[in-house]
Length: 539
Image (cartoon, one colour):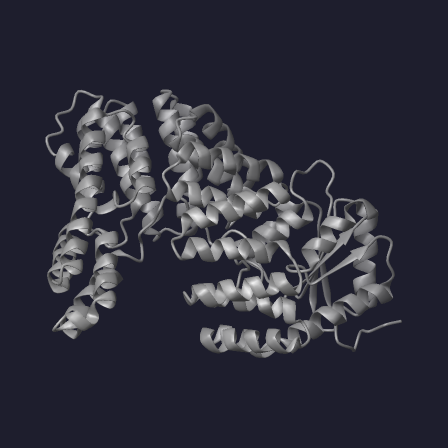
């Protein structure tokens, strides 16, 4: 039966399967349904690059790939986690009996459809039609998301959940994500718990932990995650979130062990591999870090999911080993990123550091110092973040081991500390990048203590009746140090004690200006486009 003039006539499809016979069969079935254009891919790695560069209406993907650590489910998870798969795409997983249980569980929350081999063209047509119907039913929700009307979209999801209308469970997950994004944490938690009461699903239980993290209740989140991991030890997203909690509490070694588990569960996942390699670097496990990060380069350099921070860390390790060829390899890899995005300021800073390392290795010390000073001059920039600070420090620490007078290094390190050492995790990252340079480490720890002392003093003023003095202290110190925590705390104290402050409307614009300049680029060391266990939404 031909559907050439029917619903699929203008669609484009991608078939991903390592088996030539199976791939040809799926392609023929799609063409029988009237799909206008069908492209094929034999490897998940190739498919990832294809899907990053061009949207497809339909994707048929096998679950298992011979000789590859990346399964079809891993590919889907990574594309959704990094928000590279449009909502309009219908993703159908094709599986054998052996992997049916895993695919069926994933389909409940993330997949559009799945098919168990062998299947007929009629079964495929039915699954595609059903998936497209769900997208049509939830169209109003996603139109609101596209229009950035997040409150409206969340309310539509809550209404569908409350009435148990069609696709209520899927809508509930979308709604919970939106509530978290809107910082309506308590409502998000209530929705996740209502989902669990109605129908226990792992992602809802993980969602409870996510609301606890978002609310700052790390101890409760840790208990929830420990229970969840104990009951479901193969759910990688739980380890992602636990690793984040451990990092927030400054436990780099524990976070590394947790991310190792997540990476082992999903060995083909590029982002988890890079996270694990980065944490291994921070924890001083350099052999492991080099292995994982260079493997990431080999597997994912051309992917949009690749983070060039890995290249910067590789360069540091190759420099320390006096490996000029390895350093050149890192520079060549970075140039591929710069060729694609020559105006990217983050990549430009990486390039400065790598060129500085190259000059040091060649013993061109005066040129290296000039370049390091150029890098340091960027410290006041609004988009200069913790990552940039850690790499700047790492370059200067390596220069300090050469025969160069570095009169300004202590002042620079103190400025870095006062701006970025606002939490235990950020401080531990900076200390790890100081590579045992004792005077720098002491300056960083002193800066952390000073930031904490300012926060404590401001809160004492507020609690003793002079909230305005507390806000002004935080504002003055925040502006002077560019410290995001102090600036955000000024906003928090103003909100909490607004009724006791005579001129809150005068203080608000100044706080907002500083937040716009310095808090949006605040980083805690690991980049992630999607929260662990979350659902990627457009908008």
